[in-house]
Structures are given as C-alpha cells and as structure tokens.
Image (tube, rainbow, N blue to C red; front, side):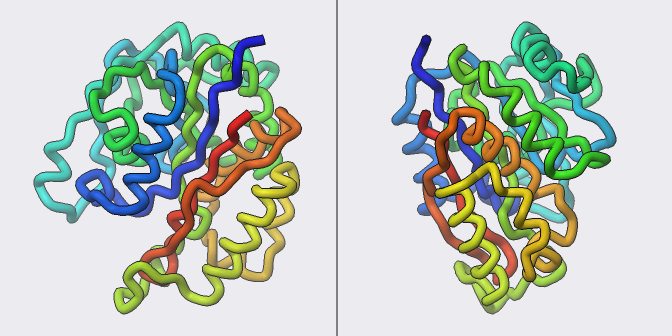
Length: 259
C-alpha cells in the first residue's frame, strides 16, 4: 500500500488572512512544504454550505470572492489552480452509497479554500476540487463521509478542510485581538482533547455546554468532521498543528492526520 497522504483541518479566520503573514499562515506553509507533492487537493470549505453534497468538476474553477466590505486588494486575488474532473469522479465513487453531485459549472474555489491555499501552495499549480457541505445532514453524516474518503489518501490526494472550531461573529470582541473568551477556550480545549485522543467521538461535542456559543451555526465546525472521520477510518488520532484565538470568538486551531 502507498504511504498515506496527510490530511488537515485549517482554522482560517477571516478572508484577510490571505494577505497576512503570521504564525498561523507560517504553520500552514510549513506543513505544505513538509509533505510530498500531492497529486490533487480535495478542499472542504465552510463557505460552500448548501442543501446537498457536490464536488466541483470544472477544468478551470473560478476564484470566488464570497464576502463584502474588505479592501480592494483582497478582491484582486486570483487563485488559478486547475480543476480535476477525474478526481471529482473519484470522490463520487468512494463516497458511494452517499450521493455526491457532479458540479461542472455552478461553484469554484471560495475564500475558505483559496485564503488557505495561497499560503500552502502559492504557485496554484496543484489541481483542486472542492466538496460542498450538506446543510441538511447531521454531524454523523459528515463523519461517515469523511471515513468514506479515506482511500483517496493512498492515491496522493491531500484533503484540506477549512473552517473554525469556534466561530461566532455575533460575539466578536475587538478588544481581544489574539485572544479568546473563556467559553471559546473551553470549547476549543475540549475539541482538541477529542481530536487528539478519540476523533470518532466528535459528535459528542454537539452537546457541550458551550456549543451554542461556539457554533451558533454548524457551517464552520462541520469541516472538522471530515478530518475526524479520516482519522477514525485510519484508527489513529489527529495532532494539533497550531492553536490560538482571535477577537474573543474565533478559534484558529488547526489539526493534522499524519497516517
């Protein structure tokens, strides 16, 4: 059997991270340079949160600027990575019997994907396909789909999920740059304990006392379920790549599954 390509969950913060150089972006870059060159990237972003599971299958996915109120410099970013229709078909194959649609024209690469990949693979020369997050399904569905994607890791595919363990824009505290509120730290700590020891138990965090504050909507947390599922399928755990907080209610914690 071929060596397993690592898989990673990246806590991406806000779109401005694409323009920044900080300890988080350096950790992502260092991770990318430490692994073999992938044959392709399967990205799972919090920002393609729709009512079905779908995978991009266009040869040239567009760079989507799915935000407003940010500097023009951010809107000028283009991430012209090629797509890979064959990889999209393979994702659909391994996902079965879960139904994943073939998206040839409606989406592309949103900022949850390109704001991270601009640091990890700045030349945009590795093919990228993006998998949507099915908003109609519970966390258990996403864990199971993550497990199903496991064979891709032995085929040279890097699976990168992008979201945030803690993501509550309504609770942002501008007086707390680089820091987390007590409730955010508690939830992040318990998530790290789960990922570092028993990622298959991630579903239990839905009942955490701080879950309602940490994930008032599940879109940014659910990408982590795919990495937890991959770790569970490999009978292993995830290590913490880097941890940290911002503005009280955002976690930048990132994880890696090495084998």
